[in-house]
View (cartoon, rainbow, N blue to C red):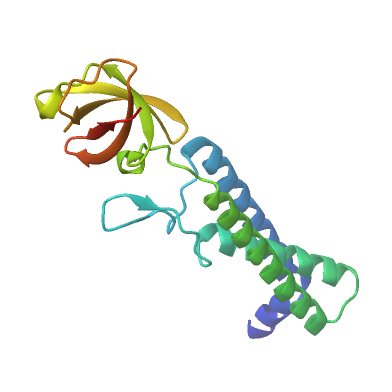
Length: 189
């Protein structure tokens, strides 16, 4: 029995088994990515503030599967081309590592392009805009402003410390942010 296992492990059957199993698993992961959002077992770790971080890990299921796809098919090709068992094994391992690294760096690059699209109101401090709805003087009430924030024109609540009301279309500069997402503005000429 041990000799049969050794014969299987040194022959093309091992490489064929690994190549077919890993390729089927890779196709299933690809289909799952299109249908189910593409979550991997160790991607998207939750951070301390409750948001998710999409850090790609070298030992994720997708990347390990890429190693075995490269390993298996390189082993099949090496065995078919008459390479020795040692040369075939070395070529299979190197190819597997190359597949793994290629997928790892590709996924890291793709994750770096990801943007959640969330508006960060604190990024508006220092920006200029204009009054949309009159803002009463000395924080006596709320008005509204329009400002370009993160490439979007937004309308938001605002107050002012100025000694006079700020009428619509008057220029303003955002100086602070108060809860809940209300801007403190000052008039500009």
